[in-house]
Amino acid sequence: NPRVGKPVPLEATVTNQATRDAYDAGMMMFLTVPNRWGGRDTREVGEAHRAFDLPAGKSRRVSTSWTPTEAQDYEVWLSVHPSRDPLGSNVLRKTIVKVR
Image 1 (tube, rainbow, N blue to C red):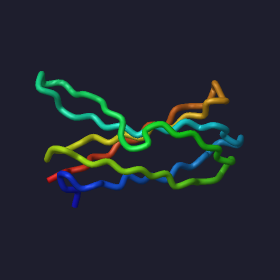
Image 2 (image 1 turned 45 degrees about the vertical axis):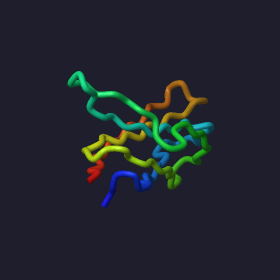
Image 3 (image 1 turned 30 degrees about the vertical axis):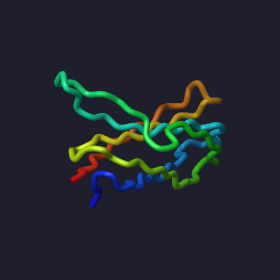
Image 4 (image 1 turned 135 degrees about the horizontal axis):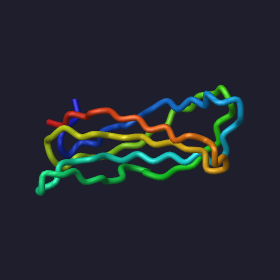
């Protein structure tokens, strides 16, 4: 149960489903929060930018943490893309974290 002022662990398992190894895959975790104008702002969280290699067919657990400052629902996103493979696709996943 995420609480204001307490670190929230953020974890995901990333799998390389391609037939080629991914080198220098870039990972970014960020969240979006409502702003005072009715839109949404994006903020990086934890070790927001990280690079790693991931062999074809293998998985890797990635994690970071973030400390929420307000009670609300946050959209937390993970983006992964191979930097040495211009044809590689971005992987973007979202989850909702409810902070009370």
